[in-house]
Image 1 (spheres, helix red, strand yellow):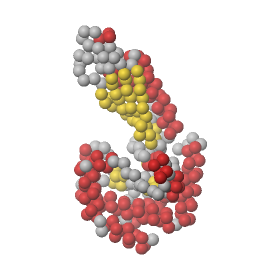
Image 2: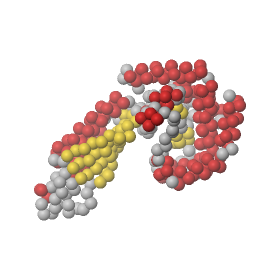
Image 3: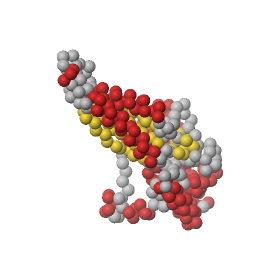
Length: 309
């Protein structure tokens, strides 16, 4: 692996400035990072889910910045609910009895779910916001919209939690006379961490100076964050370590946004990129290692299928 390591370091270090400029450009134009990218293949069936493309992927690796260097996280399953209440408009001062108040439905559903939290497990999370609920005080709102993000340790738990939350929402519609519409989006499965693959990454990262908060890869760190890598981890062996940035705030805060674009955050990002690249090369070069990774993956899938995660 020594020649590969030299090649990886040369490739990344030699493009350090270009990579930094690209990172800075995306940091300044975050909407560009949200564009979907398509990898083309020779099979026209790719657009419908090319089996040959899926079958050719042996493992997946990625890393995410946060406030600690971690190897293995219990990223939960998550689902977003887009909720609409449809009522009937009326003049709020002259004839409010003619209206069906969608704002009341939104508030009632929010309160229902707030009361539900007393009966939720500590690992079950429900977060919600009101997106719209009328514009003028003298008009009964005929439409309201909320977004809820629900999270649980496993897909099975998520299904149970979703049913409880949706009952709260439908109860609000029944109480106010509003029609209820619920759409599901951004569904992520819980992360299945591949310990064998994580140990390979750990070897290279530590050799490059990374000090993990959880050097024992059998230890699983807790996290309220969710990731689409969870979906990937149910299809192929996968790891999702994190690396530390110096920030006064956690992810999704202005403080962390500033830290992500800072010059002193770039060296660690490139170090992690090298460790990930070397991990991928090692898997491609070592058939025995790949077999071990696959054995663990199949065992983990069987465990999840049996109801454990």
